[in-house]
Structures are given as C-alpha cells and as structure tokens.
Image 1 (cartoon, helix red, strand yellow):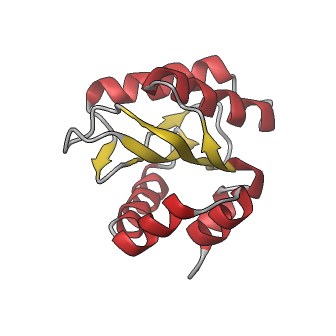
Image 2 (cartoon, helix red, strand yellow):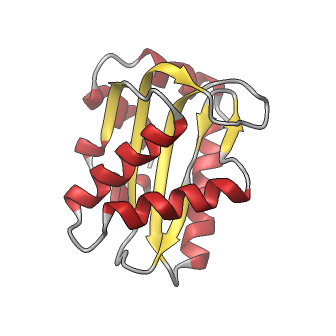
Length: 150
C-alpha cells in the first residue's frame, strides 16, 4: 500500500506547534477523528499512548512513527507533521523529534500494519529526504516530498 493511499494532503502539515509528546499525540488523534467520524479521537489517543508505553516509536534522527491498531478503524489513516520546534519523544538516540508520521490501521490488519511500518522506516532512513522534509516551507510541499517515488 502506498503512502498516498493512507495520507490525505490535508493531513500533511508544516510548522505545527507540538509542545509535548502528549499534546502532539492528542492533536493527531483529533485530526484523524475529525476526518473519520467512526474513530473516536479519545480512543485513538489512548491507543497511541498505550503503544508508546510499550516502547517509544521515536526512531532516532529526529523521526517518530507513532502507530496503533484500533478496532473502530475501517481503513488505514495517517498524519504527517513537520514540527516548528523539536520535542522530546523518548527516542532511541535521546534526540528530540521534529518529523512525525502517525499511523492507525484496523485491528485485524497486522500484515498491512507491518508492511506500512517497514515502508516508512525505509523512507525515513534517507537523510536527504529527511533534510528536504525539514526544509519544506508549505504543507503542500511536505505532502509532495513524503509521497514522491511511489
């Protein structure tokens, strides 16, 4: 599955004020919940927080991929944020995070979930792409960069 199929252009946002890990996860949950009325934002937020308690989704190099499976989710959904200021995300390398790609998939989509995470990890392992994402000056540019080469 391509990123273009799960990430709406209006869910790629440039210069977001994150503030903290908790506030950023809440922002992500609210954004997805507003677009998909079947998903309760509070349930999604709790699911993301629960997943973070198992181990941080901060990959290192300023990137985090918070994700979860949710029973009320009918199809994969995503949000991509370029933060105005990096935040502490308990990343593996202990560096703050400024690029966050959040993913929620249906509860029974285990293989799809793993494939998407693999694709994202590969994409974010490209330092040139990450630098371009950090320099993006508009949400439209951010969306084009994250969905290119698909």
